[in-house]
Length: 96
Image 1: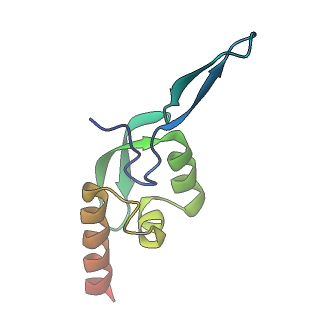
Image 2: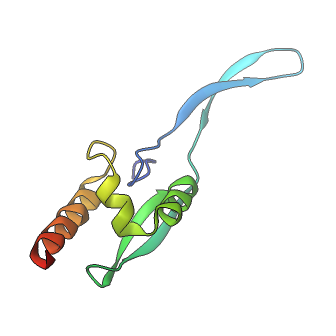
């Protein structure tokens, strides 16, 4: 399973461990991923995602999963999130 956030696309970064003697060895900084179920108000059901804690705060700040996905760029989203975004667009078109 890749270590990539499904909503923001945030993935591992690289850097150095630096010792007291200033020796440098490569290391990875991994995103803080959590398995969560986010509820869609429009569709009336929950969706399971593997997202970073930063993305959870962003979803909450934007006002929920529906609002986040409507503003999110397609290249950042995973295949599962894109599918939910298309369902939301279809439901919004049907209601309008």
